[in-house]
Length: 130
Image (cartoon, helix red, strand yellow):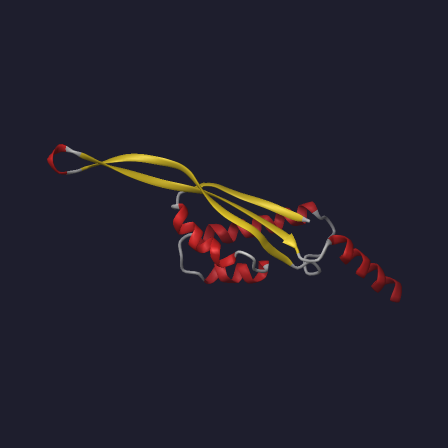
């Protein structure tokens, strides 16, 4: 079972956000949160919140499931360009240079490495042994 979380119109350039997103792609959620917590890039804080949001979405989709039994990992994370604010900056001789203030959209998908049905079967076996 997978869960999705999205961050839209974050005022950081997509290139800077992709540098941090590439660090956590394919990692387990616990390890990814540790990496994001101690990464000194500006974009790591919103990505950390986004991973926590995706975990909360997974818990909402799977009520009563224990988070430790499922090995959640970052299945997909991608960064797209968002809206762009265009400003003008004065230049010599009465000209103007365009300043483009970029933003981005981030989408993250987390999934369990062990299927929900398999975890339920293991739990039933453990209960029958007791």
